[in-house]
Image (cartoon, each protein chain N blue to C red):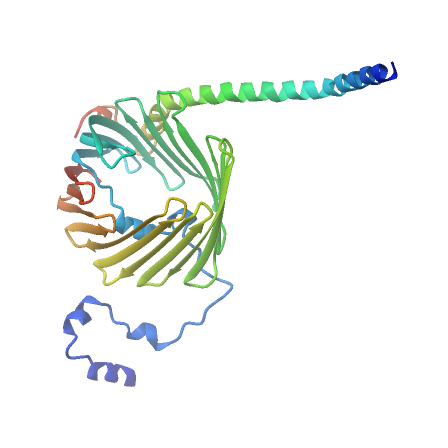
Length: 74
Length: 321
């Protein structure tokens, strides 16, 4: 009986200490999921947008090149 | 006055050819230089410690046809079109070489500013190579290097933060697969610099530390690198004259018991640049870049592997800067 009580007490104490631990574990998981989602989106954006970004920055640099120079081979 | 008379009276009569090829050494040896220990020169970046040896011994050899066209729209902005038709080698475990015929077109855009450099290359199969170099302040530089593919989990990226001090450089790297690295190189004397690097691979729980040393004068560059991954790499480059330099390289991997040593030459002549090397694996390679006209370069590449009986010859043309 005494051992059962002590076991119950231990389990309760274990659950109690897991409470804030669970919450912080959940936070870490959320942060990880969001950062993974953000990295995936960043990868897609970089993949499609990097070359257009360079072209936009280049076409706006001084002296401004003309649009036909972008396409013609001369 | 007296010294000039003595110089005029005593040129070596038998060494006329060498005297023409080598610059006169009298002025340098006349006074011993006083070393200013507080103002040592800034060393080369850690990853470029073997730069001269790599430039001479590892040219970009290829097999097939290569055509590069770079069109400058601006002083800073240029577009590049590149065609490659040839064989790419697949890595194989056996001694047979597997070659796959490939052809691709690569479109690239470059924006080169003193403070910001953006280079992007995209291939027909959707792969993107991106390089960004940004000077955040006078001494701090951010470099980003990425290879993005359409297939998942094959993309790679690396962020480098470089800080340049008066006589030291330090770099911090963050890469995908939880790769973290740092390195530091310091000038010890006007000719000697020592460096160290440390890295940690998160996903494979591997870490390593390495040390490097570089000794360079005007005529020679000698480097040595030791890493805890079990590799030892030594290199020595001798600049024989303005046009000729000879390089040699030694690499030993303790874990795979792999030893490679190579010797090479690098001729930088007025109209062409010829590099050749001979390897202890039985590989003989040569790479020629010939300037036909202003901005038009003709390239020939040859690599003959006698041990594996693999012969690779390539030719190409580069138009534009």
